[in-house]
Length: 121
Image (cartoon, rainbow, N blue to C red; front, side, top):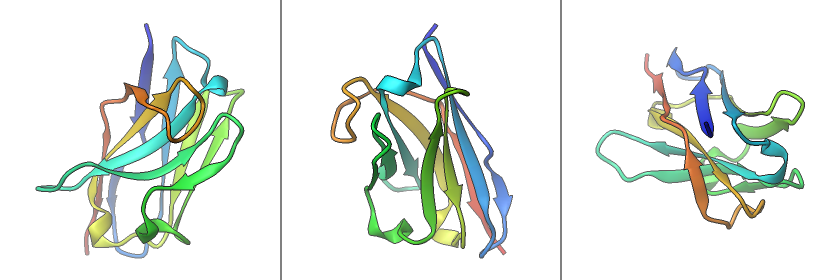
């Protein structure tokens, strides 16, 4: 019943933009922190951005500062990742995950299955 589904991935040229969505079902997103993570080919999964239940954002990596932003729409039970000025090194499978405690340092209990973002010229 509990589910997170990512969408919005695809192929984009360097310098382009994508908006990823993380839609929750089976639970109310309002009380959770939602984090975006990514895994590039041949590399370990890394954190990207997180938004707490109080709407505070946390950057897990400096490499996306000034380019990526996170937001939430509780009415739609959805969190978004806006990605601008994309670089080839942003190519990865992007996952969203939810922490019950509502803070970005909390354990991510629920995970989506990911959406592929490919940045290539």
